Length: 432
Image (cartoon, rainbow, N blue to C red; front, top):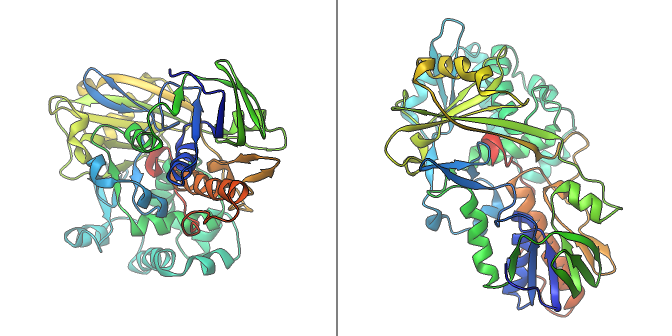
């Protein structure tokens, strides 16, 4: 840990994606900015470790390139490996069926048409729903009557098998809730990003997204292992000392932000448990997420090395399976084996991790672009101020940076163009 300065122009509390996005913009504008992070790495909930040579993310996460703020990243340097846009579902007879976006994988169109998710009319309704989210302008999407995600799908005539076999398990893995009580506006924004982007995994894990941004802030300006105890508009107190500042940005996790800023109400009630297994080889011909069954614990499971082979040290397959409730590996082993059509004895348990504060909820009414300037030199950002996603975190960080620049340098440009609202998730199929 580098020593803290006695004074900085701006101090950012928290080196997750929101804080990093704010800090990189402030540094690019010439500000003397320092980040204080309680954890041992930059990137917040995007965390990666190596276990027995395997690259293991903290929960199953992916980078959705449909997020507008992903344009801030150097995607080429991340060396992304890709999932196909779609999923596999298993029916009661044990057969596996692939549902794949035919626009991007035309060869999979026939199999998608034959998938047991309703009649041709019902499948046309799925296409109409996806087309609306993808191509209707965002302001018009946000003017639509807000309901729950489930009600919106039913209103779009996406029900029955399509809802229960595909949309509910698929979205449960993104939203981390099965009831689909999430805002319909968030669903529209989320599906828009799915339709417009790809789902990738960086060669060295999701943590490298945060590390890439941290490198832009500059050497000696990201202070890890520093726990902040109090903030004011001109001062930050921590276990490593105090720093005076002209502006302070609180970009901590929701619980810490609410503790440091009593006027801010923020929480992350969604949780996820991910079990990692190793197989001698992948049982699948294509990189697709496998959807869980309604009666099971698992919401989704994926051979992550099908998308990103560099997650494996030796060519064996790494399988990530997620549940919304805390589960033991023994609770899901047989279920994971059935989803992938392998013997349970072939699954070698690598590790399991529970993330209790995986993401905020996005219940109606959806509150986009909540204020980031609290007055008196204090600012706040995080996905709890926008949407519970990588996009929401980065967009709020960008808004906070512009607000700081307007406050400190009112005669200077306050940064780039406004951030369009977009959605996603940092955990599970959304990432994450």
